[in-house]
Length: 286
Image 1 (cartoon, rainbow, N blue to C red):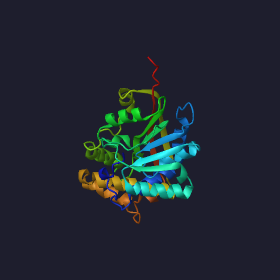
Image 2: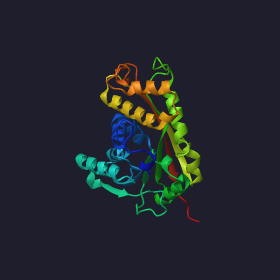
Image 3: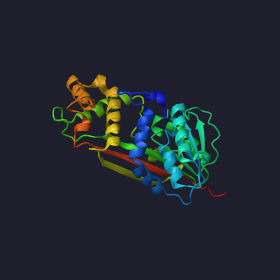
Image 4: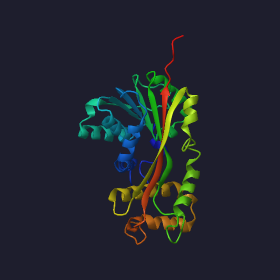
């Protein structure tokens, strides 16, 4: 489940986690549609469960892809679910959507039915005991049903390797510092979920990595996304960065200053997402 207590609701620049999730959904909508279109389904699902749904990026991509399906969206954040409900009403798909507030790290799960497809995007690495959650999802699925786990293979980068000019390689050093801070709290971030899925009883049915490279110069949404992401990195890495790196990072984040990332013509959004598709195997009768 998306554990909002692991990530402050407001980052260094005052951008809420919900706003970042919404930007992510808008900017990467085409790539998300490619992932939902790739899923190795034998028939269109009638019931989908989206675990750790956030503000609905995957929820709406799945409702668009499978117009006959009903979807249950689950998250632990009341604010995420409030925004999800508002967007569902605006899109006029609220009649196909059930919203459940729950933390799947809890031993007692709510009633979620018997879905044909379970979707977990950027949520599994937040679980305290992902092996237990994987087994629960396996038992939840209808026989032959599919579980899709989507995780970042590469966290977003925005600058060329030799930028900024006064501190080349700054972005990689910031990510390394942030990873060091987060490693103890999120040990499964960046994991290979394939072996864990098979250990939980699934048959791995496919794996795909989607690469994203979008020019950011002149694109307001990507600019906002870059600022939000770099502000969150600053919040995590500030104490571990040398003074010169921190000053250079603050220069990139100063939207009114001469070194603002928004003034650069060479910044882009570069990231990767990997999806694992795993099936609950049909057991033959003894």
